[in-house]
Image (cartoon, rainbow, N blue to C red; front, side, top):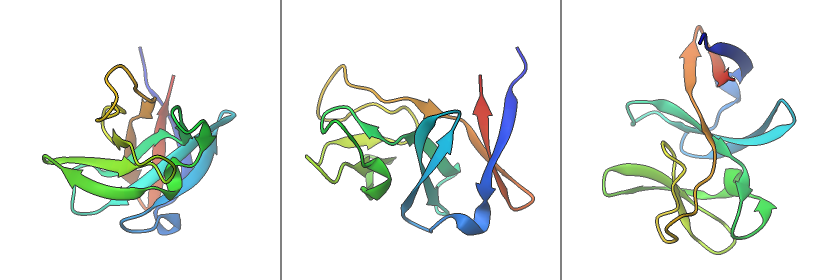
Length: 111
């Protein structure tokens, strides 16, 4: 299967150490630019399944046990940026997307 990459925004649109919301194929994503991480940019669902709102792009970044995560601004659960796994609630996971930076553009893998 070939991965289809979609240009979502410019790298200059990202905020270092914080999230922004974006729309991809009718879904809200939360993009996080973490220059000190190996991956640099992460894309997760903006939907917090516990708080039941699109708020994760406004969450606070944290590095917990060598894993980058975001704390929901509602009830403070942490979601790993790579896997989408909730660290406090076993069995709760949010969608994630592969992301890459190319020539100043942010590309997200679509299925």
